[in-house]
Image (cartoon, rainbow, N blue to C red; front, side):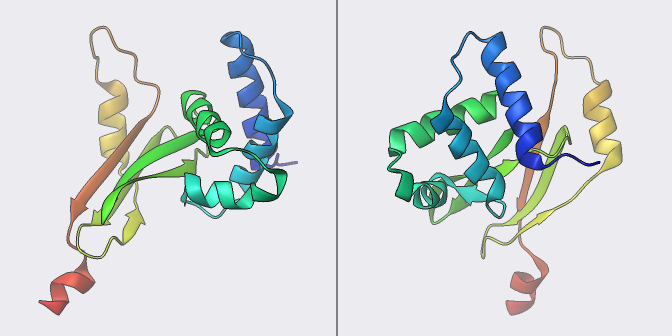
Length: 148
């Protein structure tokens, strides 16, 4: 039977908390559950809106998001749509996250490149052990090129 994304994420979170001497928090668990239920990608503001009824402060949400990223539960993706913005996306067991982003309209497309992933995984970096990576390629999408 396949486990839910929340159960997998909660297990990873609890492991991370134990390894780093941090306490388990029901509020953080709730925030994680809400994050796992959001359509991907999402912003901290969108998560705060979902958690509003529970009266969870923005500071608590941002702290939880930082822990989720450190625990490798979420990817933090920097966007450039008008203003600098960070969006979050649930890591789905994939150590590689790759996207094309149109710098004109902001359209994003996830992609995979097995050769590039293999190259990065096989590359030996002195004093650094690659565990996962995120690659964002900026350019102009086909629809924006056609509009010219």
